[in-house]
Image 1 (cartoon, rainbow, N blue to C red):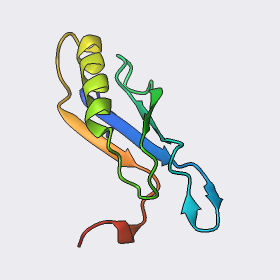
Image 2 (cartoon, rainbow, N blue to C red):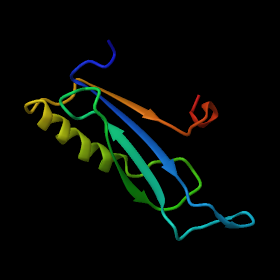
Image 3 (cartoon, rainbow, N blue to C red):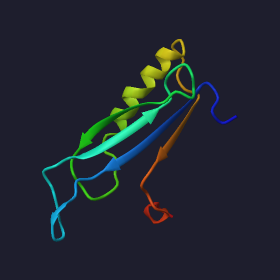
Length: 101
């Protein structure tokens, strides 16, 4: 069973503002990073939230440390002070070509 207690699953996605015209991206509007994690006592309960980051047209999540810093203590609170044994991060929106070889 891959969804066992003690395993933290974190899903992350990014949404960028639309281009303002031509090839220019809107540099003033932020990108939105949405995430959901199963930090509740029931490992099938996922709770989500979002953060903003500087607008860029690349799929980098600059707020990853903020997300982990938010989620891991909530997990420990639900599991009597125990931190996750495993962390699985699911990152949507990346093609295979986006990974280093």
